[in-house]
Length: 226
Image 1 (tube, rainbow, N blue to C red):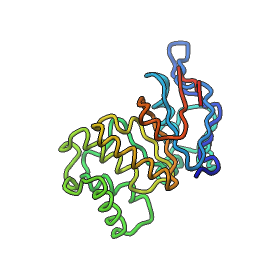
Image 2: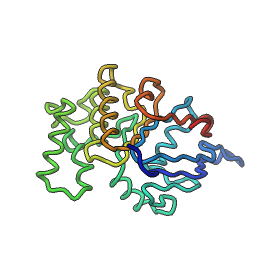
Image 3: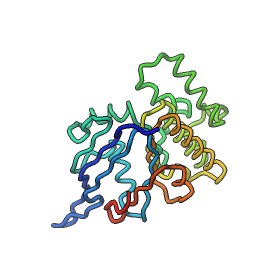
């Protein structure tokens, strides 16, 4: 079920100075994602896919244009407001995990819940449920450095979904997982999407893209097909 627009981007541009010139990473990107949609962003390396995802996740504030998330004008917000909005609505699966090294698996999963108005007992129950769902109960007291790359990726995905965010942004979410586990994760994303979660993934995989309802293709920073 898709509703109104959760994401509206208008004429988004991102550039870096290169001598007297500018190098553009994104050019005049217009994008609308409906509430409850599952879209895949595809394109060659260097097309601007991860940059676009970072702007969507409000991790990058240095761009031009207009971006509305859930009718909130992100382009008019300061860093603190953007951060609050992101914590409230967005779960992010990073390609390079971005787990906090000094926190255990359990503590990494509890962190997104700490931004919600939940009692400790409620948070414990939610984290316990997610650890169970990802078959990681036995790893809950380990630190990221004690985990394999695939296990760290699973913790990263679990952290993104633990607080039931309105929007999940995933950058090559199954890149470090073997195929069976990757398929399980994509099936879980499909289920979350059927329950109403909006998902935007960056992927090189046609198989992963087939789980979504629409593909947005980028080339040299331009949207060439949506």
